[in-house]
Image (cartoon, rainbow, N blue to C red; front, side, top):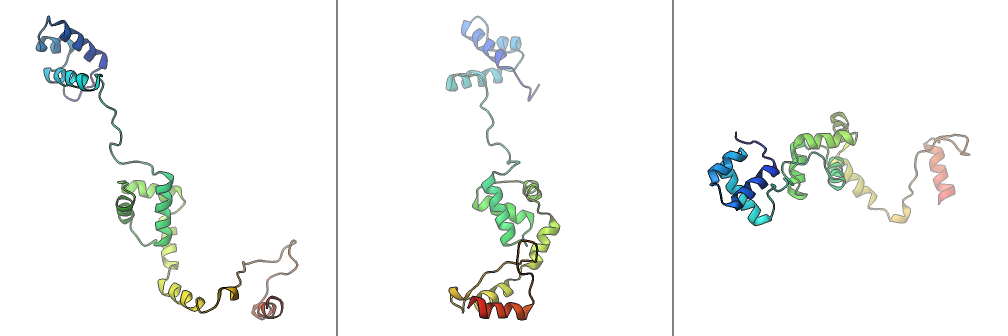
Length: 178
């Protein structure tokens, strides 16, 4: 009969029988259908907490879903350095966010965000630290007011100008912007 769920009502009945002091503990345990040790634990729990019910198991096991902040942290890690393995992401969550999660939870988080292994591998192949460093070094030589940010735009009904080749764009920068 180990690991059997005993109803709280049976434990309350056992406590009432024990308070009557007519029967012995082994007789009460036999009447209620559990062991003398269970009766002893029930008496102890009732004296300390005032209830015969076991405390709710809060925080047992690993979380199956991450909170939004932890999920965002994981996605930022993946975008910053997509070369990590799932167990390394798991290690970062445990070390820096104090979240002991399972590898499958990390994997499901990436799946929910739309990041597949193929997408992460593509991000990793596009990330070149040497090229990044060279670009930062080259761009930092210019004052901030020299930099013009433009986005790509193609011709449609709402714009007056369409795409331009290199010469037209440089002419535009020299004559219209400067």
